[in-house]
Length: 399
Figure (cartoon, one colour):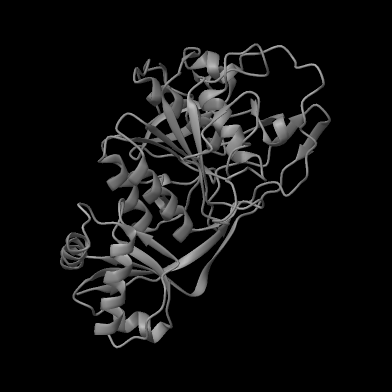
């Protein structure tokens, strides 16, 4: 029997960024704390079962497609709505790679009716989460004469930087500063799921910061990343305030599943209430040989309460955070499984929006250290353990 899944959204955390100082050439600013989430009335994510997928495959074959495409999922949706005697409408998102389904507007009674369809696996109310990121305007433009390149402490702790040229990291986040001199940004493959007609530029700073930890160039400027000079692809699923819908985040994952290749790495420095559709999308993405680094979260709680951080599987790595001296970061979520490794997350200096640099803290910052290691393909834990208040301490990531 199909289920209409309802969510209790209380005290959730999506973006894994703490309220530490943000630093740049003009001084320090304090980030806001507090994360909120709520169901979006009248919006649902519909996931198709094997019967529905078989129908979509027939539709694809009839249209000349060798694999199911988003337009085939839309056609399937039209048929399913018709069979359920629900008025036709255009889905906001169509998922064809990491999942087979749609994000669509429905009334509650229509959702109940659609849940009974023999082609539907499950229906989930869509939700929007505010990440609690700093809603500040930072003058982070570089000085007229670029500062000499420095190696942040986190890069040193995980074994130093290596050449990442020719490798690709997908950053599912707030976008990336498209013109940052310290990053090699792939604008062609980048995608904006917040404003589809716009470039996936970073109007918050968080995504650019993560991208720099993964792959800042070795160019005598600013900082250096773990996989220096790797290509970073901005997948913007969050707006300038750090707010995003699960439907958009799943769309970002689906896009990477369709356009990435085995050996690529994905950084997801975000998390929120448990959400099975997102978890399933991550599992299916990783099954394609694409490696995924997930933030554990910053609520000092069990990571099994967080999606997608709770996901376990081949090519999936959930990351907790530590500070200097291998000291456990008190804000970090815990529990292994699902956590695989711990990485530097406190007071991490990296690239930022508007061509600048900033210091941030959180499992958001720990996770891209591991994304860079995964990109290099030589992930070797050194089995040093963090000073940890819980029974199962996490091994520290090292390349």
